Image (cartoon, rainbow, N blue to C red; front, side):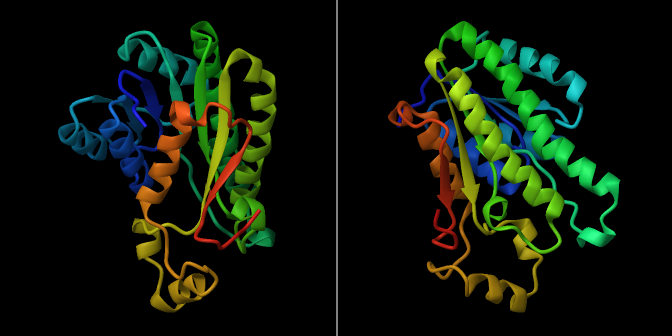
Length: 244
């Protein structure tokens, strides 16, 4: 799966899964804009790989997304082949305790900003007459989860939105798909106590947490020409925890 000379934007690149995505795409030869909110983490990535550039950006700034996509595309040389919408947040609480602010912030960043990023990228891809968008959702967007009404709603919304966009732009040679990770070993899951972690693993047929590389491999595939006839789909990467 050769991505040589392909221009790709990855959001949320300063996190664990984002790091692995950038590494995998970089090794496949892609020219990458790695974006995130933690500049020091982005600079660490830049030191590792010569074919990436970094742009600090907070996707919650909806009114600046068009400007960001324009700057990123210009930095890449004027064309955009693929956008990986990986950035997202959680703000958990039981439903009766969840404030409107907690609900709205997660919906705004995870769903609304993903839509705005996709919309802006599609405008660039229409000029190229091709493109790919990969949206990172979550297994809990299919199953629901305790204390995550806002997060699960945002991730389920991404799936439905991606299907609609895929229908709208399939004839323009633009593929829009989702990847739905299960429980992945990151800094966030490392903070879970052993008892809770064991309870999670007991529900996974593969009997282990996933690795960020498992998600990055799926992203690589959906960004490559080998996935050209896959559109509007969700690729589940969860060790068998949820089978659609």
